[in-house]
Image (tube, rainbow, N blue to C red; front, side, top):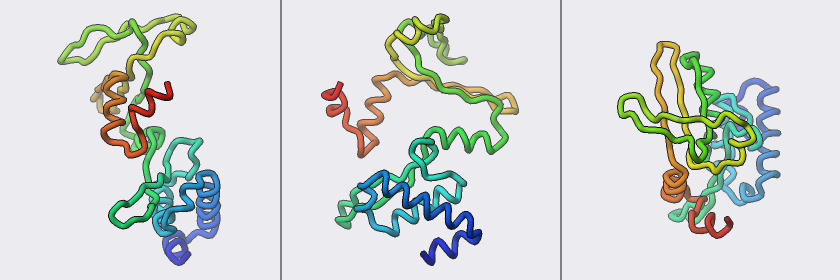
Amino acid sequence: NKLVANTLQDDKRKTQFIANIISAVSNNPTLQDCEQVSVVSAALQAEALHFPINNSLGYVYLVPFKDKKAGTTKAQFQIGYKGYIQLAIRSGQYKTTNVVEVKEGELGEYDPLNGQKFNWIKDYATRKQAKTIGYVGQFELVNGFKTQLYISYEEMLDHADTYSQAFSRATYEQVL
């Protein structure tokens, strides 16, 4: 509580911060198993970025991780993709930013200088029914710089399986 009092000077922010932590722990019982200091520390990181701790908003998450060396569970701060979008908007440097699913039949030729080309399905109902084969993100800065990144569904699953402690591709495929 001293850490929170010393870090947050505004009583209204302090009250909201404590309410956010209580709500996060109530909604995710695995956070109750975490070291309390790690929960508060992770929550303070969210507060420093002015993000509410609310999973349904998708800005930030408090994620429990087992610390095998210490034999404890700790909460870790993770920023969600919507949080990254918010930070980009706040910077004032982004003209546009977007991410969209790529459906079967939409992937066009690859141009090494200009990126992936797409043949977008125009009819909403047809597009909604088509199988998702990947995702593309792109942004343009106010200075004119523009780039995109395409990742196939398979590459995304491989990445998650390799780098996420909470994701198992084998388990995911069994569930499907």
